[in-house]
Length: 190
Image 1 (cartoon, rainbow, N blue to C red):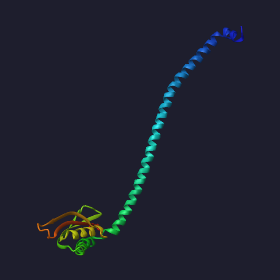
Image 2 (image 1 turned 90 degrees about the vertical axis):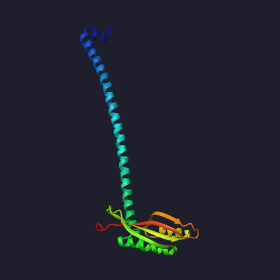
Image 3 (image 1 turned 180 degrees about the horizontal axis):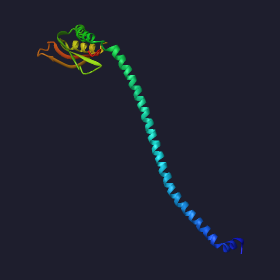
Image 4 (image 1 turned 90 degrees about the horizontal axis):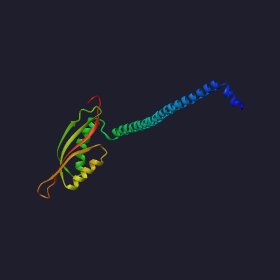
């Protein structure tokens, strides 16, 4: 008998107990490793989800920052446009529409027959719109020249409703009716 067999024969109870304890230990380790593997997989899935959510949050922050920068730039641009193109007040807006359109009509050889001025959109707290209805008469070429001058003039004038009519006579002048508007900043609620 060799040394190991003799020890196993003499100490059978101890060796059997140690063997069973080793077997139970291996089985418990296997079961624990199985459950821990699931826990690790779940933790890894949570970590991957958190990483995706973090990346999405970073993207949203970048987009929000870019939007805020673009909004500030648009505000600066709008403020510059307001200062350079819009009339400074109601009197300047009235001059732009009433006198400015009369001058442009005269330059385009159109006869100004009627004009009415009205303030609209009083709900805005920053801008007000002044609108003028104008009736003009002249040739088609002169009407086109007038509209072009209004559109390219330095003052900010928006042509709204536009209607042209001609009598049955081909030599009769064209009757042009239009609504022109401009905006001016509100000061002191007026």
